[in-house]
Structure formats: C-alpha cells, structure tokens
Length: 276
Ligand SMILES: C[S@@+](CC[C@H](N)C(=O)[O-])C[C@H]1O[C@@H](n2cnc3c(N)ncnc32)[C@H](O)[C@@H]1O
Image (cartoon, rainbow, N blue to C red; front, side):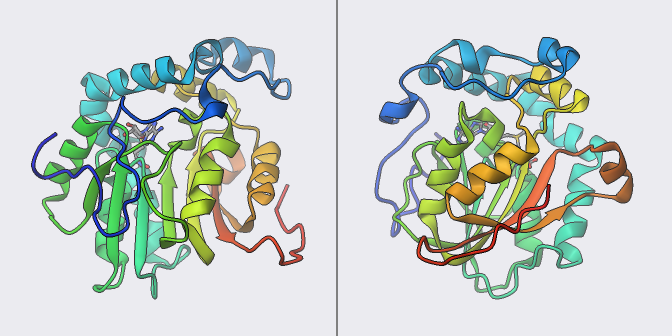
C-alpha cells in the first residue's frame, strides 16, 4: 500500500482489514442460497452470475482483479463519458442530497474518487471525510485524481467495515452494493456505522437491460428495486426520496437505483414510505 492510503482511519478504526485479509463473516462463507425474484429472460442470460456461483472470498478476489486492471484504470474516464460524474455532482450542487451540517462523512467504494470529489467540493469545511475501497490500486488512483490529502483513504471491505458503531452522520455508496452477494450484508454494515438520523446516498445497479450489461462488464449482480427498498427498511434505513439523474433517466429507468436513506432507530414506528 502506498504511503498516501491508510489501512485505517485511526481514531475510529476498530478492526484492521486489508483487502484479501479480512476475517470472513459467517454469512459470507458460502455462495448465496436465497432465490432472487425471476428476472426477464434476456437480462437473466446477460447478467454475470459469478457472485452466485463461488464463495465470497473467491468473488472478492475477482473483483479486486477487475478493478486493479485496465478496466479500473479507465473507470474515471468511463464515468465522465457516461455523465455520471457531472450528473452526480448536480445532485450535490442542487442540494438534492444536502451535505450541509454533516460532520463525519463516509464514502464507500470510492473507486477513482468520483463521489469523493463532490464531497470535497460541497461538504462543510469542518467535515471529516473518509473513503474506503476494497481495491488499493483504486484508492491510489483516487488520491492522484483528487490531488487532495483531505480525505482519509482506507482499504476495507463493505462487508466488514473497520469503524465503530454510529461513527458517521453521512454515507455515500455509489455502485458498490452490487458487489455484495446479498444486499443485507452491505446494508447492515452501513446501518451499523451510521448514527440514528444519519443519511445515506445510495446508487446501485438495477435489474434492467442496462443493468444486466453493467453486471457483465463489472462482474457484479443487479437488484430488484422493490426488494432492495424492502431490505433497506428491514435494516432501519428508510427511504427519504428516490432520485434520478435526469427525467430521461427516469423515463428509461436508466442510471440504476438512486435513493436517499435515513437511519432510524428500531424503536421508531416509521411509516412504510418507500416509493414503488
Ligand atoms: C463502479 S466503482 C464505483 C466508484 C464510485 N463510487 C462511483 O460512484 O463512481 C465500484 C468500486 O467499489 C469497489 N468495491 C467493490 N467491492 C467492494 C467491497 N466489497 N468493499 C469495498 N469496495 C468495493 C471497487 O473496488 C470499485 O472501486
């Protein structure tokens, strides 16, 4: 690991966790057994199914290989081309996801620093920003691309975050949850490190035709929107709003599932307010 990426963020870190060396939670030991809802046949055929066929350790190794290689190297350019960086920035600039007042911000699966760049630009000057990624080469690319020492960059796995409970009042998680065999695995970790009342901006790949292509290219799974939002609620992550990059994205159901979630305590009798 280079000197500009860290193994843990120091004061909040509770568990050492480098890529490939993380202790394996029991629920990740074997490939997923739960049956997903049926998808359209074409999408089913197109979608990459490695995540369902191998153990989490084997799958994680493959993901690290993918992002360490040329695909990872061109990822930041791809994001620019697909418009996600610019359109994502617009959500922050327009305060559709409002960072004001957030003091401890975690960006999960920082990649080449696409969302971290927005956090640096729109978060309060006093906010402490941490980025994690399972791929050390991606964190190094993020550091180079951002040209900033402000965010702490930590090599860590979403399935086993090296932070104490309730460490963050804000989380961003862009296109990473699709690298979990089950949404609940990543969401429960995210909910654990969030403070009650904390908010999360979540982007993930949907089980559409476009999503199936994304899955093939990036070796990930896709999610059914309704099932994912149900899983969020089960983790006390309540949907505040469903977001779309543009009206065209909404019309074409492109860009994946984009939602703002709020962590609530289990005792709050919250309404089921998720959109369909
Ligand atoms: C598609 S990129 C997303 C980059 C950025 N967040 C964005 O929104 O454009 C996915 C990133 O998630 C990382 N990743 C994949 N599985 C992960 C895991 N289990 N824990 C942490 N990061 C992971 C990959 O290494 C990659 O850098």
